[in-house]
Figure 1 (cartoon, rainbow, N blue to C red):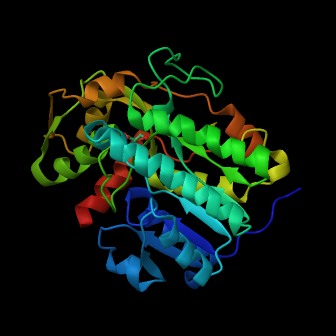
Figure 2: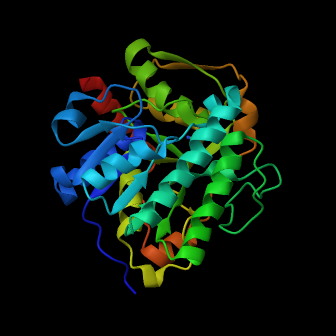
Figure 3: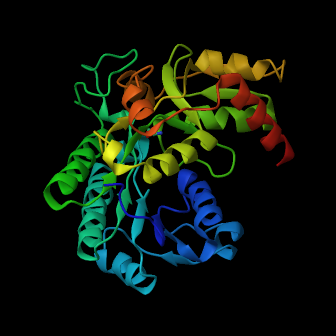
Length: 319
Ligand code: SER
């Protein structure tokens, strides 16, 4: 069973950090008219709006997704709409509603409309203080302390449940912090690893909200997009996991990140002033073991820290 082919794709959260770039990559691959971008509130960029269909929907209101899905005879959903860790701690009720009820609506709709596939990202936020922190195994203790992590664990379990119970082909991967230069992340704990580049270019200084020795797994956007598409297109018969793949790319401390920027901007200054996000970062792994992803669908990242820094500074310099 290779799994059916995706033809008409709907992306939720298409205006977000990952969604804005994933939508463009999918449009290139599947045809612009076949990739429907959706967002809730934020105005889409001209690029997103002018390159293919765009709709405003609210994932907590199923009928708003259903109307677009039926109109465009959608067979696949990339469900990226989510409330991230830092915003989630400020409004846990909202995080539960969007992350849990939103996913439930997407899965139910996908079943009802007999869709081919649902892709839903999970996160390193599923791990917690009792999890081994280095080279964190795929199968391990999942006891997160953030509401974001709680909803992501539930989301993985729910996705797997829909696969085994209803035969719906749901797939997901645990992203580390994602670094990119097109769209800012929307309120996560790993946002410092993006902001530091912007500030290095603009002001030659950055006040980082986690300690210098904070080490987290990270990934550059081109690898993030590749991972989503590779997993979505993988042969179903090769998958032993479904919604809970660890995916790694690089791991560095905030200090090492600043040092890497200093290789290109020698007068860059970084200070460290931890806030409430430090505790969240301290509950997450330093690095992950992603051997199941490598084995089952050939995962292979392309960027390390210095390659990413070169690319980020060049792209932001032009901006
Ligand atoms: N980047 C996310 C966050 O910090 C982790 O999935 O919330």
